[in-house]
Image 1 (cartoon, rainbow, N blue to C red):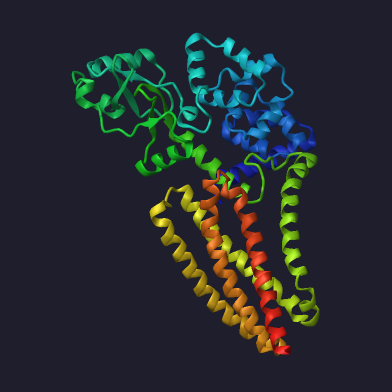
Image 2 (cartoon, rainbow, N blue to C red; image 1 turned 30 degrees about the vertical axis):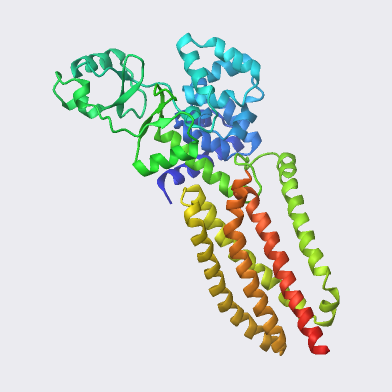
Length: 454
């Protein structure tokens, strides 16, 4: 078990014991000495009543730090009972990018008051970030960037940095801009520290730089960071003017959010679902997804009802029927997951989609023939009926081929239609494999047994 995970569990146990005994003083001390991310994890790992108590025990500085790491649903729940003045006082100390994200979750009158409380420079920075959609590079960026001109020397740069005093976190480069604030290149801090003071910025700067458009979608930003092993990257508007920078911690958040989205969407849950949320709220959200699944189950049941007479005559069909649908569902899910992952990584293009489909159909055919032979032989021996073995083997091959085809084509089709494959793909796929599986199995049985009786 990682040390951080073990430490968090130990802190949670200690806090729960202290809360149960009613001794809040040690809890207050422990909470306010924890890093913000760890304190946020403890809050999210606590039921609502304990969470509210823990929030009340945080001091103002720690509250501001913890807010940055809380999930959206938990954060909104905690801030809901604060007055406007308390909200303004709490959030105005956040970094520009974090503040921009939070203000989109708060009422308009709070946003207006927060804006009014900022100085002109910070207000302009905040307005600039909020002018871009949240899921773009502009919405992710931080505007706190140190810029220098190309004609100055390292001695001047060093004096400027000493006079400034505070350097933004994760600053590995200084941005080089011209007098119009157009981006030219980057100056690594290491060069400023070890090079001759008389060296000019132009002589040492790097011009072959991976810059990012402010309108680029967040998931594409994450891909660029991954491919180029970036720690920070400059963000430019359409005129090449430097508007901010994106740091690796912002990109990690994007990656985590996308992973959460893929995982939670397959179960029909929100990305920010609160594990310890209220029973009513959780039940209400899940009810819709259960209703959708009920409709798909009814559709499969309707197919089965078409073959009532056959099922009455051959009871063994009812015993074996779930096998065909289950195998198709699993095979289809494997293909679906693989394709959704490839789409998220940007690996699927028009040029290679046909190869992927052929490959998955080939895999479906091979697995279909293999397991069809196994289940066909098993069914024949089990029920002493060779016809039954042939029927289930043929149906399994058909369903595994359909599962491979659906698993490969569904995500690409849904993406073109503007539907999230992670959200709806598994439901549609299950419906297809159930219907095709039942129809092929029972349909073949109806035809074969009827023809033999004649």
